[in-house]
Length: 172
Image 1 (cartoon, rainbow, N blue to C red):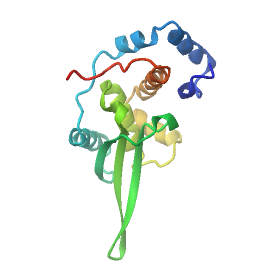
Image 2: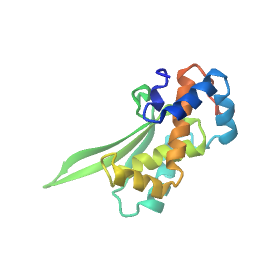
Image 3: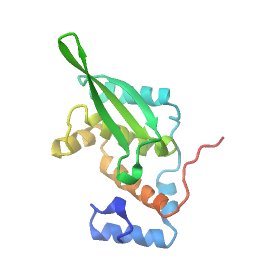
Image 4: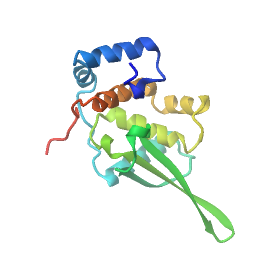
């Protein structure tokens, strides 16, 4: 089970079940059954609109996000699914911060639940900087199934890490 780096924080029983599904070749089928369709957000412009809609719905008083994009340079291997950055600039005598959200390109094709989980996570950083109890409470307020989607996303990354197929490749 040491070859399951995305699942190290989970209990041994869950890791054992995941390892068994992986070994039996059933993990892809379980994920496909649970998440049958891919989302339609393919471009950076569509992603920006998607993020803005979520921000308006859940975090109206949060600072605006100036840029949102899929980023091929994010290393999912290093456990980064997305990035929230605040770029500070001096404007006159004031310091202004612009917020940017970048999501790993691997999630351009995936189920809407995974995209929503990653987006909610990055939006939560507008209010809570640290990954603490308040941060995860905010994530769950925006997406009640946040923890389940995160676990399933980690299962998918484990599948990909072990040479499994990309499950939601867009029809071209």
